[in-house]
Image (cartoon, rainbow, N blue to C red; front, side):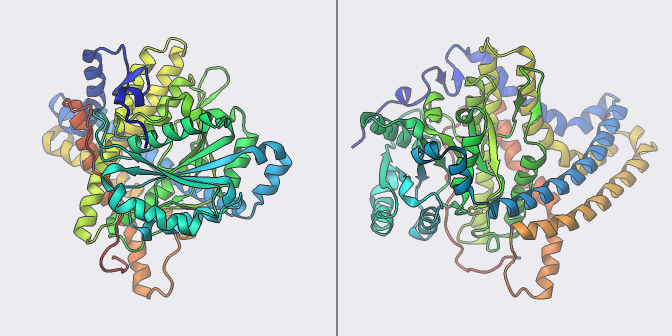
Length: 538
């Protein structure tokens, strides 16, 4: 049985609640208020501009957004098209041969750890994932399976499931074992996998080191328990690892992250969001992977790790694993590593699909409730803004211009983009309500016309997106003609989703942190259950 530790022994030794130990409380509160304050400024900007007579400034900003969004729309289609092309290329590539040609000795040394965090998931969720990993082309005998269990459900649910899986797959994998994360460690975030996988990997690394193993020879795969990778995923990642510069200061992931396991069974707005997540992720990797910065001829990747990624086990130890005091594990891991490696930590992608579950519950109503709670938890990912900013303040060996660039990347990705759709759809109407000067101006006539042009152009872009989306997310066979029409019509629901589930829960999370709930410890663990009626939801 694992030794019970305190949260001080499980968290990074130089951090408390994600902040450097020397960070005073007043500074923490100031930094926590910045994201929410900025977002609320943009949300209320139509009213603020009307009150202070800044209508021209607001009109100029909206005009810029219109032009920029046309550019983004075209770039988005190009990015997705490139991604589909690269996916076809990678799926036909023999990465095993390429790895051996590059460095056969190093390839033979590398072993893999499949870290599988579980809570209440049943065998019908877990077994397809184990089956997929067992078919990896690197050979299941090179994969060590670590199941990270929670104490509350281990005895009744997960240990019996583990025993069944071990009986079926134990001879196929290099090893299979589990660790039970205690539920009584005060100060840890609950309802998320971060503390769970942190406990499992700290204990597993200690075991390997006691056995005299070189942890640098292990590549760790961390993902949700429902993820089913392409058979070539690990060999493609390994080839990247063997060929890039500073391979241990990178994380590796699939650019083709789909939720195809149940995409056609979930309610429509969840499907719309899940589809856009796949397309946006692919576009980001193909066209926005790196941003140039004027420092040491280097590039800084603002693409934070998301859900599933691979990292060297020694790298994980050097950055002190995942912070169990924070409710978000993947994004906080990325920014923590960026700071600790002085900006020299970034992502590398492969174009082989990995399939996961979209949010699903027993009924449509329960599914939407679960979806909202998941998006609210994701919204708390904004905690990386104050914690990273505090770390940058106390990091003396990172140039000031690079610090500014990193902060700008966070502002752009987590704050500015968050308000674009809201302002473009609601902002002008609000300005017209509160400002007579704008209501009777030429801009009040011309801007809606420009918006109509934008929407028309985006409809054309969406036609191409539907074509490429079907390459990534195959539709069910034998659809009637009317179901194809409904599928095309789902494009118009993107704006609805971005103004509802893609906006409100995030605004709630940012507001909570702004008002002093910066150390939220209890989150909703997304249930991975199946709808009672297995059908295509329209």
